[in-house]
Every structure is written in C-alpha cells, then in structure tokens.
View 1: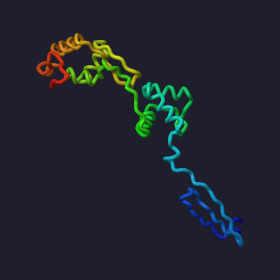
View 2: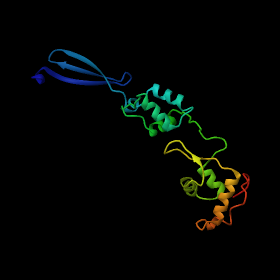
View 3: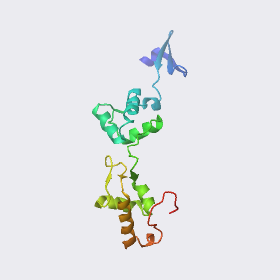
View 4: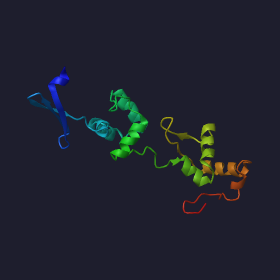
Length: 184
C-alpha cells in the first residue's frame, strides 16, 4: 500500500553537519526528514574528561593498580560500561601523556639494575628475592621489585656468586667491588 503512495526516496548526506536528509516524493507532494548520523566509533570510545582528569590527579601519588582500585571504588566505568583495568590506565597514560609517579626511593635498585651490577641474570635476583636472600618491596602482584642493599650484603652476594656451581662462568668476570664508572 505504501509503495503506491511513495514515488521515490532520495538520500542526501550533509557531511559538515553529520546528518542525512531523506527527500520523500509522494504522489503529488514532497517531504524532507533530517536525521543525525551517529558519531564515529573512535569518538564514541573516547574516555570522558572526568576520568582522564581523575587519572592525572591520582597518578601523582599512586601506581596504576592503585588507580584502578580507586576508580572502580568510585564507580567510574569505561565508555563501554566496563570496570577500569590496568591496560586501560596504561593506554590513557600514553594517549593523553599522563606521567606516572616514580615510587622507587633514591637508595633502591630495580632487579635489573642489581642483576647488571652483579653480572647475573635478573632471574637469579628474583630467585634470591623469592628465597628471602634479598629483601625487596613491590606494590601489587604486577609491579617492579625495589631492592635496598648494603655494601656488606652486596659483598655476600658476590661471594655467593663466586662459590656457586650454577654461576661458574661469572666467577672470573665479577669484580670484588662495584664501581659505578667501571666496565663490567
């Protein structure tokens, strides 16, 4: 029945206004209907300014995992309505140039720095941390390990490396004392 009343329909896209106009030609009359187009998916997935500013504020004193907990406790959600995750925080930091806080103390070393200093693999340092040979701290299950070590503890580790059967190839190359400017 409707086919008998409508002669044709023409669609005109107005790109500047992000709209389409439907020109319906009836038998004897013409009507125009303007319909807004949905925003691009990239724009729909943008994080609200409120979340970005909240992350900027929290990042001056909290780790990514702590920011996730704080935002989820506040009830904030992603544009899709999902709980905030660490991956989202990392992406927002990159996308909006939000600097991260350095929670490492000046006297601390990372596991990688200690491994370089002792000329061993970072896996050995992690093994020593796990076994309690080295005291270390870290924030959350995914965060880095920060190690505070005295000269005496460092010397004990060097002795352990020298006498270890697993680290034979490191014995000859490891100096007795670490000098920051020396080549290891």
